[in-house]
Length: 184
Ligand code: SF4
Image (cartoon, rainbow, N blue to C red; front, side, top):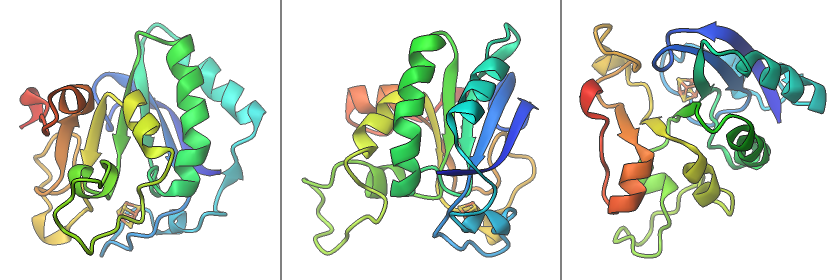
């Protein structure tokens, strides 16, 4: 896995002060993407053990509320493979810090298990063996592609009206999509 950028003091991508990781690689090709160079899975630098330790050190501050994952696309299968063991370690080290993740995929359609899906011919290119575990580690998911025509600069923590801020833990527990009330 490659990383495009790390922000160690980010207040734009989730509540409080956060460490944000922008992974490389994205297949959505949204019109007017804000981060086109990160479509390439080889863009940026390798996620080495040293980079990981550096991120953990940045997170180990009392004023850091949590970790945000952006891209590129954290839910491309290649990136899920890199992120799941990292998130597992993160949760053990920092059980009181939360994880926000931004994805261009749609929660129900692309990221949940498809065994009971009624759209018979639909196959998500994101869903893989790592997806259920990855969702378990995420507290809040901001889902959906950025749509230029639905852009609204007044929205908090998202760029366009179609994107949703989902409480993943509640959604998985209740088996239906639960939005975070304060950001609806
Ligand atoms: S999902 Fe994000 S990085 Fe990927 S094309 Fe869309 S705006 Fe760009």
